[in-house]
Length: 313
Image 1 (cartoon, one colour):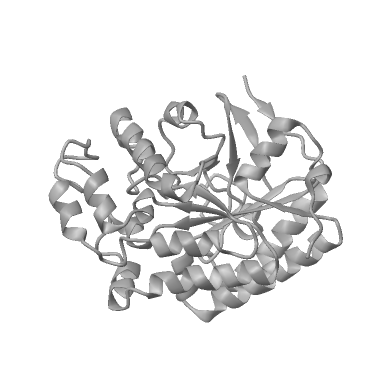
Image 2: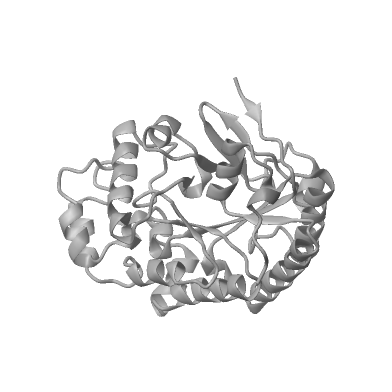
């Protein structure tokens, strides 16, 4: 049996898939990976740009981080062992791990520390350990991906509540529940939604409602920022989608990959404008920005969101 969370205020949720090169582990010929290899620091540039925008507008976000990025090269050599289950035979095996060394595209301790040091408190969630597709792996692999991710994050004092599946491909929900996760992002509704959905949702991202199913919350994505069907439609669509969430008292859930900010300056400009628009609605008392974990807390407690609202600096 499922239940639908009843919201007391419209909510903005932002989730950030933080992967560096791990996001392309199954697609080594991807154009973006080629750009990152030309300048390994570019992967961090997108992260830094978005953190600056979040600080500028005093916005929280859920940073779903691949577990490998919590590790130093030395820690990876200790934690990753020959007996760990493989996604598929010969893929990401011991030899592959051993060859990574201190490649900055696969190491991210500095990224984690930068996020934790943000002037506006951010949530850190998990995006698997090595970007394995949970829809295609065995339960044993899924358990390893979760356990290694939890262990890798321990030195940062991170207790995960939120999970984002690699490529939004859902699987092995029982493993998440067994390890204490309370919410995950489910399939996006927006620009890249299934063709059977209404055309309106393709250009005006829809508000969504968190749902409690099988003892865990899930929240759909409204729109992936930086990957619009028509680039000129992204900003007006996102603004109107947020208005729809305010009018209907629902959640507007934006998600993105930091590398999308590197595709062109228009993405950064549009994100700046959208966050400014959202901040004004927040300051008017018409919108409450929250992390995924914060949303789960409120839904679990049953307390009105207003009781948890903090004054905007």
